[in-house]
Amino acid sequence: MQKNILVIENNEKHLNDAKAEARVRKDMVLVDFATTYETAEKLINSKDYDRIISYIFFPFDDKKHKKSPDGWNYFASNKCFLLLKEFGIIHGAKNVIEAASLWIDGFEMHPTGVMVIEMALKLKIPIVLCADIHRRVFSTEPVKKFAEHKGVEVTDSCEAEYR
Image 1: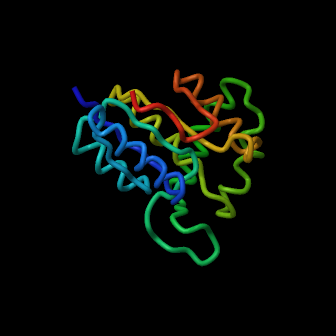
Image 2: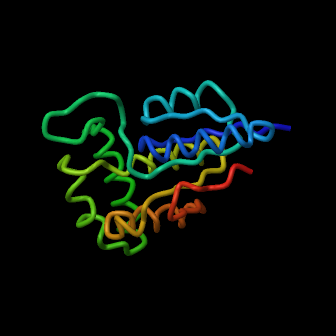
């Protein structure tokens, strides 16, 4: 039986790699792709998924911004900060505020993947987060701790398995 998987990724190279892998495994998986939170949310609310594979830092929407990364959103930035801040206060991840300083002000993309974690857990959909942790060690650390506390695996690449 085929598994329904949602892949959330906005990097064109990683997205093409995931699509190529999905074609190879087409007998085992049916894969939908989203590049923004808005699209992912619509798909999740309209279809039953067996698994979600999500990048951590991706756009909330398709809107263009003059000073912030395209897809950066004040609501998403604030929601991500509040989720991580509450976790950090409870569990001693003291660098949440420092790590958030760039994306809370719109200089970097917010870790929209934490919002996907909350949605997936609420709907009981298994989720794996992936990121270039080696490239963004400081900004991914609070997200990684948050995810692990929630029982969500975080992998250092978007080569999460389609099983």
